[in-house]
Image (tube, rainbow, N blue to C red; front, top):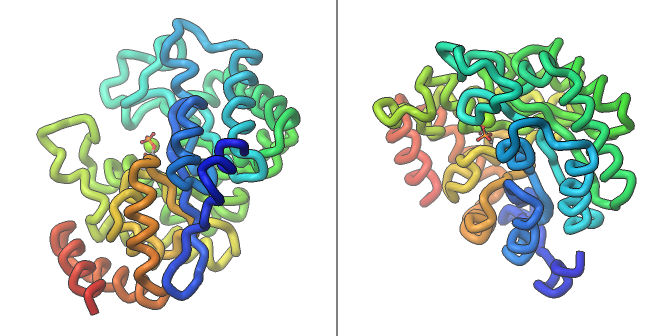
Length: 313
Ligand code: PEP
Ligand code: MG
C-alpha cells in the first residue's frame, strides 16, 4: 500500500463510456509487486506460485509458503489478488509431482489433476494461503489451474472454502470447461481464462513446439468463440470473468476480449499502459461490435484485420 501512495493513486481501467474494466498484473514472485503497483496495476489477476516449487527437490514447507504469500498480499492491501494453486506438469514439470514418462504431458496429469493426485500438497498450499490471508488485508481470490470438468470445479471450490478461503474460482483453459462455463460457474465464484493454454488445446498445437507456433494465436476465431461462451456464462450468472493469458496484453485483442464479456484483464505489468489507453478509446458497445467483426473471420489474421477495420469506424 505504501508503494501505491508513492506512485500516486491508481486510476481504474475504464472504457470510453465509463464502464470499469480492472487492469491487473500477472506476477511470478512477490518481489515483482512494487513494479506492478508503480505501473498502475489495480491488483493481481494471476500470481503463479510455481516459483516456490521449481527451485527445490521437494515441496516448500507451509511456513515458507505463508511467508511468500503474506509478502505478496501485504503489497496489495485492500486490493484483489488472485493466487493460482500450483500448476505443475507439461511446460512446468516438477520432479516430485509429475511423471516424467508421460508421452503427452500437456494432456497428462497436470494442474489440478496433479494436485488432486498429491492432495497433501494441495492442502498444504491452501493452509498457507489461509494463514497468509488471515494475517493481511488484501482481497484474496484463489483459483485452480487446468480445470476440465464441473466435478473438478466443485471439488476445488468446496475444498478451498473448507479452509475459510472466501472466493474460489477456476482457470478456464480447456475447451471443455469453456463450453460448459455456465455449469462451471454454478460452483465457482469466478472464472479466469488462460488464453495460452486455451489456444494450445483449441488448436491442438503444443505451445512449446516451434514447428507449430503459427497455430498458437489467440486471435483465432475458434478461441474467440470459446471466450464468448465464457463471457456469456459470466453475464448470465453474474459472476466475474477475467482474462489472464498473454492475449490480454495485446491492446486491440484486449478490446475484443472485453467485447466478449471479460470484466478484468491481467497481464505483464509492462503492457498495462498501452492496454489502458486502448480500451479507453472504445465504449462497451464499440467493443462488442469490434468483437463481432473478429468472430466472423476464418482465421487469426482475418480476425485481427477485421477488428482493426472495425476499431477505426
Ligand atoms: C494460460 O495458460 O493462459 C495461463 C495464464 O497460464 P500459464 O501460461 O501459466 O499456463
Ligand atoms: Mg495455463
